[in-house]
Image (cartoon, rainbow, N blue to C red):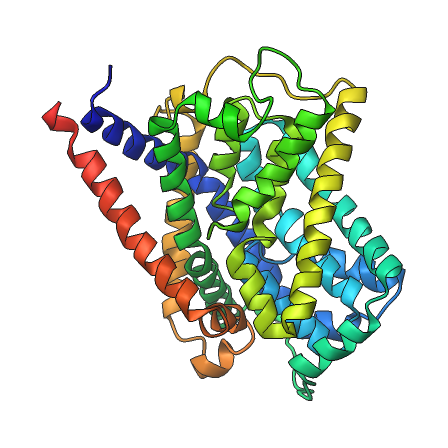
Length: 415
């Protein structure tokens, strides 16, 4: 029987291994995201999107696909689009696409889970957007939309018509300075979520017995296929448990992998993955943006949507005999630090990241405040519009996580 010290060490090694396995995927995804955000600016999106209709929804989805996967950045840009006159459905389409359809999230899911979950993530993201469109059409929240627009106010900023072309930016020092800054800010927005999420995943893997998951997620386990009621219960429990967390979309993937290892159904795991926009900090930020009535309306829309979509994915995959099967190797049994392609990719992207940090620190020929006004807007909203209590709790959890990881790695010689 493992001692407490051994379990602590195992938890710290597992958390570190999770991050090491996904490091190159994060770096690649945020490099692609930074390039697109600099070359396809928010002002261009605002000028292109209309207020309503299929074209606006399609454009909102497309712009979300090429945008950041950080939940707080998605909230900030969604408010900006809504404030510029975009309709509620196109704005929600952008928010859902920017947190479910982005490239880096699919890569991380592929590393920790399987291709079925990647397909489920992207197909489910599209279904969530269609569900949101139907939900709004059926409920017709006109008064809520009017109140929300009064809450956010009107943005009369007409600047940005002189945006440089993407060719000019990609061949200029200023453009790469901007790309480097955006890349750094991408990491600044997600590193706390990633640190806490991966630390919690390691703790759960080392300390939480399988019986806990069987009790929490009714019908979980690989001995038998759960019936519909058990699958439904697991699909509801996933987002309810996630609601009280502070972990964003990129940080909860190892937790989702652990749930799958413990026998939670495909629907339950997908519902948990989709739950990054129904966590408590997101609700509070939406309330600050649009008022509590609209924030609760969006929460109801997302909760009902992710439950329905997860069930559709589960039974759709089951009908096609595509539900993922257990490989027999638990995620905690993997050799995270072996010499393979992952090591090479990590070294390559560590070098790329260092180069981008150098670009970010070098002057691009303009006042940095003006330079970053647009691309730093996400970080500004994350820190200034986020609930102060949430920020304090998050910072406290970061300190605890760092102490836990360092201590857990350091206790190895003692047993």
